Image (cartoon, rainbow, N blue to C red; front, side):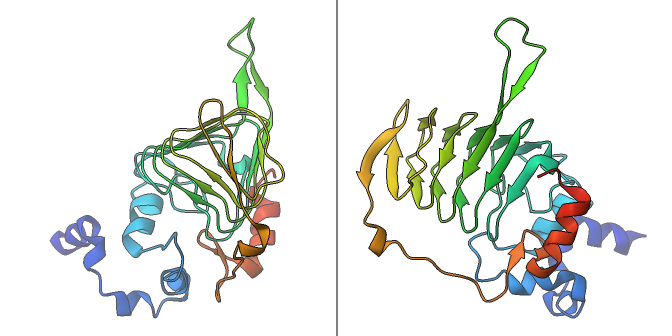
Length: 214
């Protein structure tokens, strides 16, 4: 019993070589090149201990972040909304986030607003964030915002309108374009091993049909 308690309290001390022999934990080895690298401790805190109450997400979430209605969220390859601390992802409406998009701490993504005359009622919208985007610390994305590929959102920005063409840097409150990127300089890439959170890419569609509403 003492040994079991020790393992539960110190999961990061379980030898990595043992874990890598278990097929279930392939994501540990296969996401080492990811910006959203998944360690055993991250998985254990999220899925076993349920720290933060976000166990239903198929990607890792920090214990200080909150994700509402994960069944309405599509998070692409190497994209983990809420992995950094202090994030709030509200998916009363649908939220789409593309591959290789990075989300800094304290980011807020809102897909539904309260009705002005009856705040018990939510009016759902949608949020679409493209591939290879970067949301800086403290960014707030409001309902019905679309950000095209390669949109960089400066720290603290409040995004209230769409920027569907992407390839730009936006900042401020409300956010506006402060720099247009040269498309030919924007680098696309693909990892050798493809995972949506913990799920291998070739198994994701089956998971999506069974568990997601998006």
